[in-house]
Length: 352
Image 1: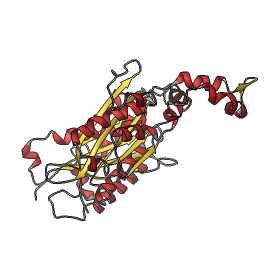
Image 2: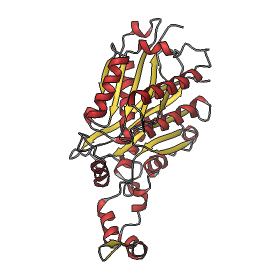
Image 3: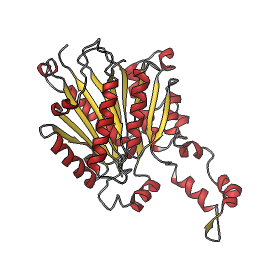
Image 4: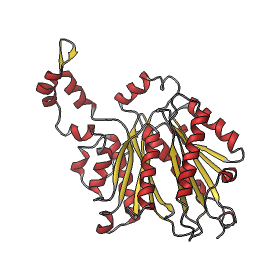
């Protein structure tokens, strides 16, 4: 099977509350009126990434796109008008919602509320027509989106694919969710952002290779057990993607975890970050560590930001390291508010 490399990256954010980004022109300003905040950030990052790839019209039609997306995040004025018109005697009324509520808001609000349009708006603007999917994510879903893109390229379903996550954790509805579940009280710092990577078949030893990724359920068991499960799944994915040994791309075995030099963390807040740091220190005591969650938690975007950080770490070693007999390796550890940990395995270099 084909080894899959990360060829390019693009991101917007993270932006904390009160630090909204400057408006960027899109291929269609009319479409901007129909976008949620997450869809807009994703569209901007996608436009940059597609610009780097410079695909032809035919290549755009085959380009895959898989995105971890957050909850509905429509314009609050429209949402408030819809709800105000839907109450009878202080209680929400479904008949009143259908009779008056829907008529009280802008019809274009529907395109902001449909979660999949966080992906669709940008895909439409960039004329992408390959395999695609929008996966709801509070952390692990973004790992699943990356896995889908990885499989699409590796299996030959498309020559190139884009994957990542986009979300707006500062939206009032999302903030209410995070407060209700206790995450804000335990130190989560909400932020907005979108982060994307481009995948294609590896063509050389200097490529940053996405060897495998996986997530595991964290419900009803210790985090260490769940992380070990995610590692085992990611290792199986790396092994299955190593079937084609015609190139010099490195492979993974369980003992290769001892040679990991870089760790990138994506944690929803201080408790999760502390747990991931303890796990990383015990398993990878000599690895350098970067925690992207210190910049704010972007929910569906967090793991993708950590992935970009790991790619940058792997691109930084000297040529002597890259040309050494052993490949440089990096691991992304993630733990979102869903409680399901994820693992991404990356490598670069190694002797033929």
